[in-house]
Length: 373
Image (cartoon, rainbow, N blue to C red; front, side, top):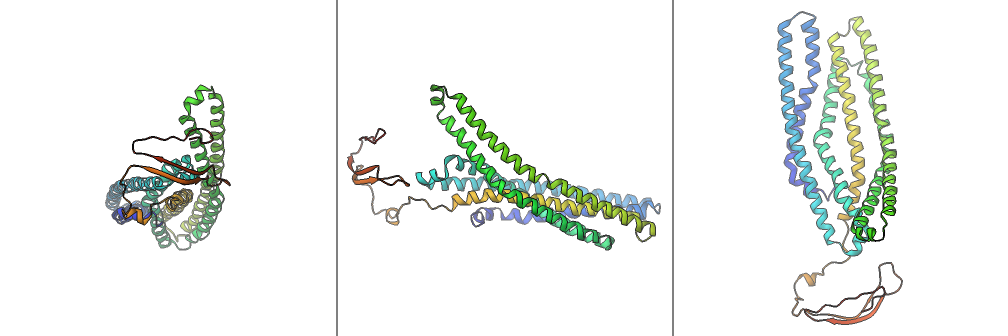
């Protein structure tokens, strides 16, 4: 998170305004069932048309207010998430430019491209959901539970069973699916690597008539990505049927026990209708929260890959003495004296005691498979 704080501070106003807009929108939505119960119990049952008109007008005004603030929040959240993604992408690109050749080879060019595009897009999507759904879901949950308990505390006991059951099922499914999110990003790296290699060397491929071979290699990589995406999707999509099952059983229980209370005269019809609507809002807010958690889990895998690059210290850096300007270039001549070189994982030097001088304006090339000068 420390890598993102300098960027998030730039949008701190949005993180102040957005919760206020969400609070207004949630309030305008959660009071609607309450007004509906008044229309049924005090308006329709008592044939009070004035109350029906007055309450209906209040519902319309609240709905319009909720629509306006929701549109405003969409504008704020979209602008913030896109701006954050752009700033993070620029920051990561500048970091990549500081890396040495060996650092870039360690990550691979294809992987760096994926981190700059797909991984940052996932983080950007999380910022968007944070400003829209992550604030909306808990606020709706709290307000809906308040109204549910207010209507009938005994029926509210049903939530004591459904909410923990839903939370446990969500955590088990996400825990099983999280490892696949990391593998999916790695498969995207592999696919990008195949595409990049083929496009850069397209002239060589065509010269040696290797189009069929490259097509088969791309197909294998694409199929690997497809298989992994399908495996992760198969785990995640089970979340929705489980939630729907719990939701339907909860509604069924409310209708059964609430109907008995209505028959016994201890609960009004309008209150039962409002209770069912609030129950829907409670469980829908939990479903939204689970969706947010799922996206956070997927973004967490991408975030680790981004932070891995951001926290990398370049293997080649300028010394303080060089940055101080004590060694200014006076003559454009380069001289090597007894220079040796070996690759990072090599056991022996591939160049030994090389000495030569390149005068200003001259060109020296080391060519050949064995490095002949």
